[in-house]
Structure formats: C-alpha cells, structure tokens
Length: 185
Image (cartoon, rainbow, N blue to C red; front, side, top):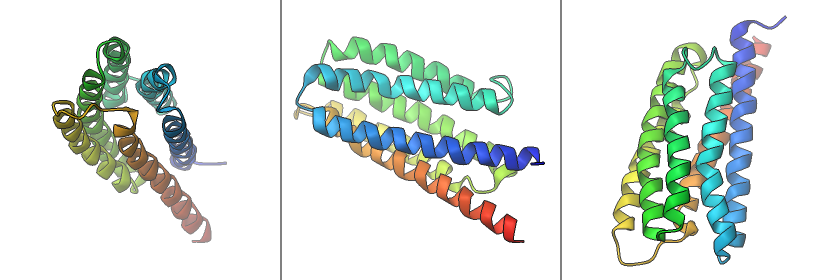
C-alpha cells in the first residue's frame, strides 16, 4: 500500500508530464497555425483556460482549494485572464501580449509560492520554483514588448510556453528519479 506522500508524488509526476505534453502540443500548434488568426486566437484563449483547469484539478487532488490557496487564486487569475484574452484578441495583438504578461507575472508568483510550499513535502520542487520566478520575469518582458512598435504574434508567447514545458518535464523526470532512488533504498 502506498503512503500518502508517495501517492501525491505519483500524482505530481503524472500531472507534470501532462502539463509538459500540453505545452509542447500547444507550441507545435502555435507554430503551425500562427498565420491563421482564428486558430491562433483559439490557442491564445485555451492556454490560460487550461492553466485554470489544471490548477483546479491539482488543488482538488491535493486537499481542495481551501488547503491550496495559491492554486485557488491561480485558478481565479487564469479564468480572468482567459476572459481578458477573449476581449484582447478582438482589440489588438499588443493587448493580448500585455494580458499574457500580467498573467505570467501573477501566475508565476503563485506557482513559485506553491513550489515553496510543496518543497516541505516533496523536496524536489526547485524546478517549479525556478519556473515561477522565470514566469514572473517573462511577464515583465512581454509587457515591455507589448509597448513596442513591432506587432506581436502568438510566436512571442511560444518561448514562455516552451520554458514552462521544460520545467514541467524536468520536474516530472526528477520525481521519477527520486521514486527510483527510494525504491532502491
């Protein structure tokens, strides 16, 4: 019988792998469909919507929204961002990039907090902590680029998604390594 800690670690491994696969798929679709405005708009809307859903499911699996306030807030921030992206897509690509920038800052800080909180229980959250910090920095860069003269596209957001995929994949892989080490001990 698995302990609660190993069950949660198993969940996190699966969760992080799914998040990485989604991000990689999103990047591939964004690159392939960047020249098709309707598909690009759809992708821009589903990215924060997916984040809201993923945080909601993860929080529910790990004790609920009350036990995971940073994720509960991240769900709210991502839902609001989804709605803001819907509005911004009809306005301008500059507005979309600015919305993504604000979201990256807020969700990055919340992810950083979640990673620090989980560090006590899982010990291998350093990649999620780095990801949260880098997300916040990337958000500032997106906001500054949204004020520039070059018209942004969905391709301005793919590096952000790429780093997210990298960190989720790294976290999942590291949790696999830790599980094997524990099994061998």
